[in-house]
Length: 515
Image (tube, rainbow, N blue to C red; front, side, top):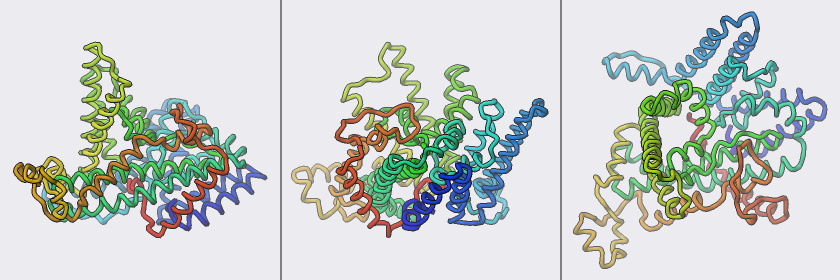
């Protein structure tokens, strides 16, 4: 079920809230049980078959964690942990990577092994990682949860079930006791509805419109069409910002919905295109995934405790596996490898500056601007394999981005080149009709979305006075941008919600649903 659908907005969410509030007046356990039932219904809306899969996953992990907590099995605790993690990884490997593995074996050894197409269950990557983290923390005696219904809600809570954030038990379990009992207040509803409305606006009116700019050239490149310099860059920029506002919108909507139930989710998206380095980018993009990879992969591999060479190897391995987590394709591995390489360069550059006695960061406006621009360009380049259908498509688009497919400006605007037209033609530019580039109009759109991402406050800043999510802190923003329960803000949010709902006939999935 999609957040950006009439059924969710006008039926599922209101009914779930009303029944939850009513049950909570009598019993918090009944209210929690209702949320679990509603969440399973939400999950099964796309394919009811997979309700059994997530229920079995929950039962398996809860039983393993309970057995690990028993004093009598202390000597076998590590074996139980390995068994639990293996069970989760085997489930993930079968549904997500079996076809990928068989296809590669067939290609390498020229075999004809056939395997029926396996439909990837929604959210399997998210609820699998979440439960692996729970098992590891249980093994390390960091968790002490024995309520099955609380555990069920921890895994299935529908605002964060499909595309994250990857929540941690210590963030959520206490709220299921304290937060649920204090959930019915108008502040939670007002704050939650405002955040949801902002997220819906980002998804429907910004991300989905950018999709129209990005999809056609990427699909054309996959079909063998050669994209020229501007077409390749417009496609890549458009997709980068489509994904940005799509993920930002989903993160806002998830936080807003959860807040309506009196629950705070961890921040998962914090203006990553404002990042001044790749290190900074990964502190802002998919924050809970970065946390998981750091805590449960990078640090167990040795982190930075075994010298710089081993540190760089650990970074690269972590990002490779992070790329593979996103999907069973060599394109995702390439994307992870690129970010691993970027991070290695970033850490190396910081170390070099420290040797020279230079500050690793600067607050100069020029430094910030240049750092943001360079970081954004590197991120956009890495998004190409992330979006492209396959490696030939990736290579074709990147060839266009570096000018190997020519520099073409749209024919009907050739006269606008003025005195420079002859010069441009003398260095190899041509003027032709282009299907995927509208000239200055496209450039204006892209400058506009860059401006939105760079200079406007994000939702966390707008709602910061009301602590909308679990976060170590909120960046300050001028008071004029700060939300407060006033008539002006109520009218503004109502208009945003109304206008957005009028465009819901173009319903589209969130991009992170496929991971």
